Image: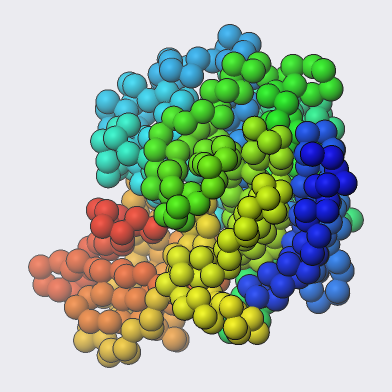
Amino acid sequence: MTKTKLRTSLEGLDEFIDEQLQLWNGVGTAVAVIHKDEVVWQKGYGYRDLESKLEVTPNTLFAIGSSTKAFTAATAALLVDQGILDWDTPVKSYMKDFQMFDPIATERITTRDMLCHRSGLPRHELVWYNSPRTREELVRTLQYLEPNQDFRNKWQYQNLMYMTAGYLVGQLKENSWEEVVQKSLFDPLGMNSSLFSVDEMQLQTDYACPYIEKDGQNIRTPFRAIDTIGPAGSINSNLVDMIAWLQFQLHSGEWKGISLISKEQMKVMHSPQMAFDSPFNSKELPVGTYGLGWMIEPYRGHAMIHHGGAIDGFASQVAFLPEEQIGIVVLSNTNGSVIPYTVAFHIMDRLLGLEPVNWSSRMSKLMGKESAETETNPENPLEVPIQPDSAVEEKVEEPHITPCDRPLITYAGIYTNPGYGEMSIKETSDGLQATFNAIEMPMEYTGKDTFSVEFVLFGLKITYTFTLNESSEVAQSISIPLLLEPGTKPIEFIRVS
């Protein structure tokens, strides 16, 4: 199919994307479509800076979140090609002091295990989220984090494992993961705008500001620096650079006639390693599998390889159809937006000559909303759930206010967990406040030594339950449910002062 025919099949795409921005209350988005070596579509929509009315361009930088994971897997593949790393050699063979909670996992976990999410660990997101600890320090905390599944038993999305894989890559190259990506991927691919830090991104001339919806309005939210967990999601990029990345994928590791990664290792990354339950659960996407850094799912009978990403105020989707040699990237600066998915799937429908699926309605139903509201009331946008790599749960109903039947000083103190670190509970003029990783969280008593604790930035509420000493005068520990992993063993913080 020629570029002209492809563009003809996308007639009306501008209007569709504008409708999606209105429907889902999106601030801005950037969309690119490629076919083989040709750029079919490359445009910005909406605003990169809503307050200043600065428009999105193909050069606008966005945080791509977990779409970074494919870059980390690629750096490991480079080392496999160089004979420095083997996918199936235990990590402990390379890092002698490496240790996990499960002794079997300590001895047997491999780079392949880490990169296809079968470590046995649940998400444990608050270990790293806004943490002041270094990457090396976080790797050391793995020994204190309890698994909730047997090693290699189940696919469980895991950012800490990707961070560890990136750390290993840096150690083996006697450098940092960032330097390996820069020299081995960014530089040869000409990805000259891509960066690893939102702090550095804000020094550029064309970057998107992050937004989160609150009460129907898009509010600018602070940039979230996740440099420490970088290999799991810290890359910032734009359409121009991501087009090169997609072309590199479609050419099976070749760039301008030079093989950067062997076809053999590209095939490993693009091949199913573990099955997972697709969140879409539909006839269009009936089976979900994960490769190394990529999700591999058939889309309406066509092979599709993709990965989404999200971090505070940003969302992305990077996808390609290897048989048709089609690549699509959609970047957004709206927190947890589904626009990258609705737009990418719509483009696939059009290019494949299929009757377009109403993915807006499907997404609405997926989130437990009435599809009629999505289709008939675009000015009343729906709440959007956070994507997989965010450390935030969806909002819950506010509890009924209950007077505390003990002095608040009973609960005040410093509590620690060897994996999570230190948490402070202080009495303020407004009641108790928890502080963890410099995040301040108001606490509201709900009865039986239990508090509803709010993450102010996100409106997230979770339950803190205190255990008191025999005289019931002083709290000794706090039990906290594991974020994003319902039904798992709570995290225990022990009082130290």
